[in-house]
Length: 116
Image 1 (cartoon, rainbow, N blue to C red):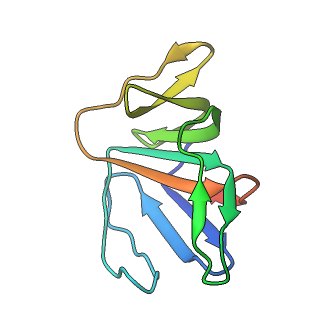
Image 2 (tube, rainbow, N blue to C red):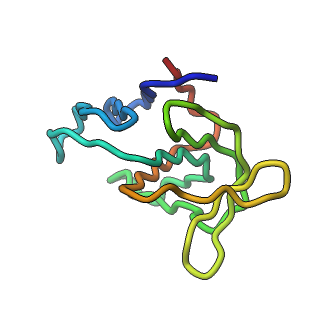
């Protein structure tokens, strides 16, 4: 699947758009700017709200499902954390990251996102 942009929308978290090697915009309250990434990895994780302030416990050890975007193409993945690194797999083989910037977007399980 070809993908030039991915957008996620989650109540309370704002909207984030990340593009493949092109400027993007984020409307989060604590960050406004442009980003570009060679590798975009979106991982679904378990999130648990800890208190009334909305602080969360996020499982970043995996395993879980996700999507990787590289060179304008997307691929469904499974992921897990090994040796302190989040690693993406497809068909049982690790997907190597391309040289350049890598952005990992962590979203709650079931977050809907659109690849365009």
